[in-house]
Length: 211
Image 1: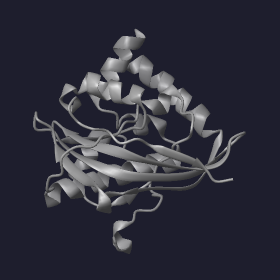
Image 2 (image 1 turned 120 degrees about the vertical axis):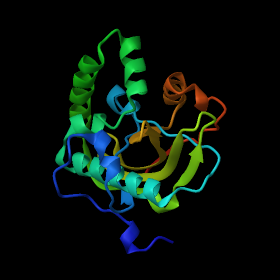
Image 3 (image 1 turned 60 degrees about the vertical axis):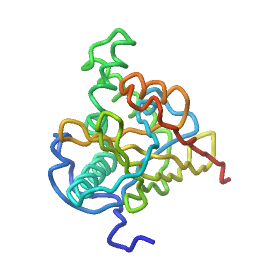
Image 4 (image 1 turned 135 degrees about the vertical axis):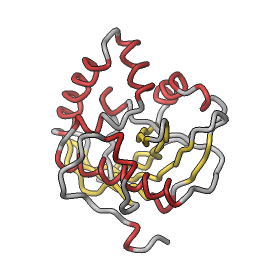
């Protein structure tokens, strides 16, 4: 069981807007995020996956902790631009291409959708447990970590619910990106951008109504 030092609560400091550079610093290991039963397209781009376990280096672990904590800081301050900058460029480019938009225009649209969605929910608890993450490496050499994620929220018209999913921290070009997935459409988006995940088995997300 992870000790208190491995649990990162909501960050209070303002986020660094250069998300790609966050993996070069160090910090804690538990973070939080939000998931609703019916996510907008904006949050549907956040993915997750599973694969063979592998040992992580201290540097990899430290850099993932920082990326997660800084994402959490952006979430706490409502900085959706920074949150979206955690999306892997390859995923962003694929989605933009399919939508017939530039990546810049897509980001602006997603930012507005995220703001609208988040205005409809009240977050009671949101955690990601890096201490219990499963590490892996794709056949092409991409290192990744699968981080258990739990969110408890109250959504207007839908009541109080708990969501359990997995978030993927993916390292590419010496930078870490955060993505998540809990349905077939999101798996397809991930594999379209990263064919090397084609032979990976993905877990299903779970959402339950609490009251």
